[in-house]
Amino acid sequence: MKATFSLLDIAFSDLNASIILFENKFYPQSIFYMQQAVEKSIKQLGVYNGVVKPSDLQKDIGHKTEKIFKRVVGHVKHLTGDSDADINNSYNDLKHLLKKAGLKEAKDVIIKVLDENQQLEIPSEVIELMIDIIIKKQAPDFPDKLKLNGNIEFEFSRMKDNFKNYFPAYIKSVMILFHLNLVLSEYVSTVRYPVGEEFDNPELVFNSVHPLVQLMPTFIEQCRYAIKGISDFQLMIKS
Image (cartoon, rainbow, N blue to C red; front, side):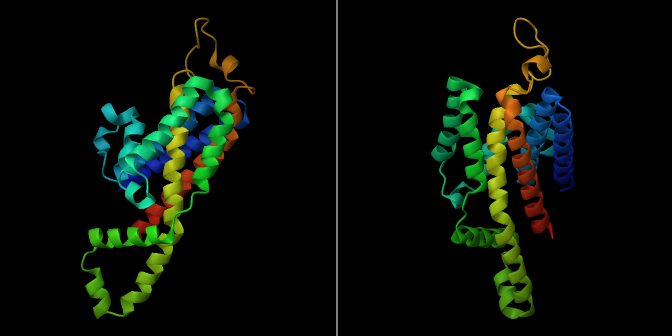
């Protein structure tokens, strides 16, 4: 558990670095640290959900955050009503748009998708189902204990209320990170090394009119929301 929260702490530090760099107009560096914040947050999800070993983070799976995401979403897709096809189609549609039209043409679509992620409605029956699944997995004898000890009922009711408050933001945060990574992962190298045949300095390419730089205020807001959503939910579960 310590490894997962350490990753989230580092992700939050990377986000803060990105914000400071952006405010001081160091745009390529800001983009790099934003990508790092997103990548570490998704890795944290992989470790937390038991689909990635901490020792494997710097090995083959280290930069395959897309693979981690799809494995994590696979654990909850039956609750959100999504199928593998839905998840892949959503991913592939945006990926195809980015490849075909470019970031400039896709900018408004990206903002729309991120806003839709944050406004995603999680039906109450889905949340109740998730609570039942967690109880059966973590404490299969809990229903019997509840019948025998009425004092537990109040605490259980409190726990359910907390879950209902934090679980929707957790799912939204996972989806936000997925789409942020889809955009940012393409720029890991180009914001750090000379660009193109002319070996242009990234600072000349990623200037104030570059579409990715123009997206950064939205990305900062969304990434902050996602890291907080994941942290709040996991701390609630831990308590």
